[in-house]
Image 1 (cartoon, rainbow, N blue to C red):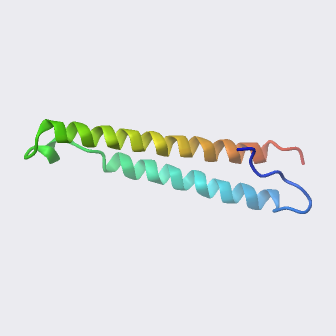
Image 2 (cartoon, rainbow, N blue to C red; image 1 turned 90 degrees about the horizontal axis):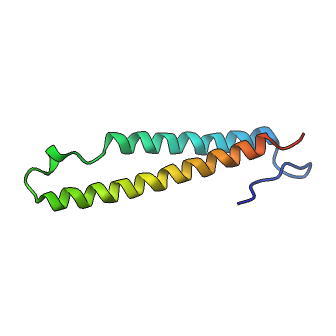
Image 3 (cartoon, rainbow, N blue to C red; image 1 turned 60 degrees about the horizontal axis):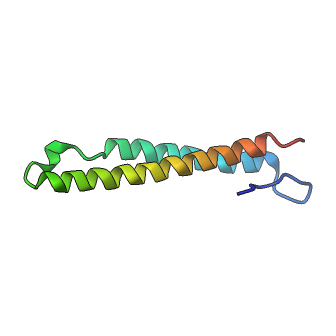
Length: 85
């Protein structure tokens, strides 16, 4: 993604930065919530170890996606900030 380009006819730099900060903060909150909800073996005592392993793998894959989304949002916000005024 190229990202938004600040220009006279476009959205104000400060508004763009605020919007993308919100995305960064939301992805931070998502990852924190995911850490809090991570699969724990004590919650899988009555099922097979394979079920726990599968859930843990899926959780890890989704955490990786959230991390990727966070990096994308942060890179976009920094790209806007680093544009010449």
